[in-house]
Length: 256
Image 1 (cartoon, rainbow, N blue to C red):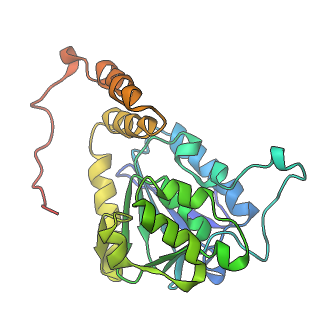
Image 2: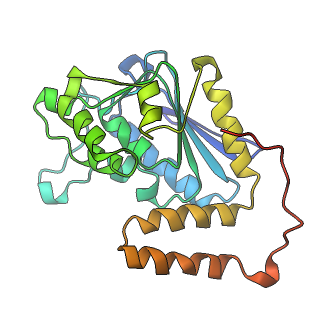
């Protein structure tokens, strides 16, 4: 199936690659992109030939600057019936437990954090900058910074959300505060993201997906629940009679 706003490909190595493809509008999302992502996440969730996912973007200037302010998106007239963009864009909100790697470059702004907040591994190019313009446009910033609290210290999240267009976080600073786990030269970004995804895709898929789900589920639990409930995952997924510790690959590792 061809899409209008993204390029979607599944390789023989079990890695699905999603490429945002609206560079003329800085890969901002409109309703078409929202609908296409809902379908893409359904495919990623149900197609067991997909073991890992890479999300990246075309164009030189931006990964994404959030919502398309000219086209907008469809909004229900009843505010209590309206769906947030995250219901379409978020991998975890669409129950995708296959690991998602985000490869960021250029401007990463506003609604782009819907994708970043629900990624499992986030890397960026050395030209990446991060900012949230909501308050500069007289808009409340809520869901994007709330999601960022899982990744960044409170003070950094508040500064990003409050200062709007007055400040940007550099790639170096994003690494220092834990927003990204790796910074690479721009020319190496795509290859590096695919290398990481391929490593994950080569592992037993149910073990990887169970790990992703256990960790994300723990965010919604009390401290006691996060100790007890995730214990069920290895009890169900790692029966001792089925484990073969000699069967796993022993790759040459790299030290970060």
